Length: 170
Image (tube, rainbow, N blue to C red; front, side, top):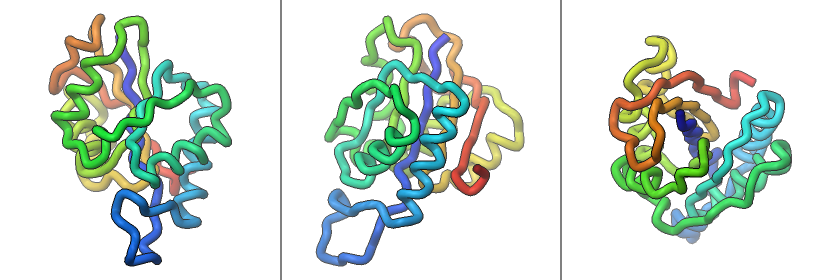
């Protein structure tokens, strides 16, 4: 079994209209939300073996605030290709993971993260699936368990959506 944690970046700031989308930082609410998710990761013993993170500033800052709370996460691989990646590109990236890893934390953007979560989901409680479908807010985290031996085997509808954690619920 492989475990996939999908984390959307935390709330970003729009106060500087001269900044490119790629360079937008987190706002205060985003920093708080990322810390809450980090604390959740720590308190629930989540231990992804690989961390992949979009190179955009807001995803890198989200990771920094998560790491402040969830000590012990592995060093992240910061990847330009995850910025604005759609579900297909994110799925392709998961297929490239080393087989020795049983879990991954992927930090990226909507709509790709939400579409990937729903696309990978074959089963899950109706309530959780409907919540993810309705809105995948900033700094929200899902856990998907895929009954596969190799990352290359991951396909649409191959996973079970077991958790949906939003900062507002913590």
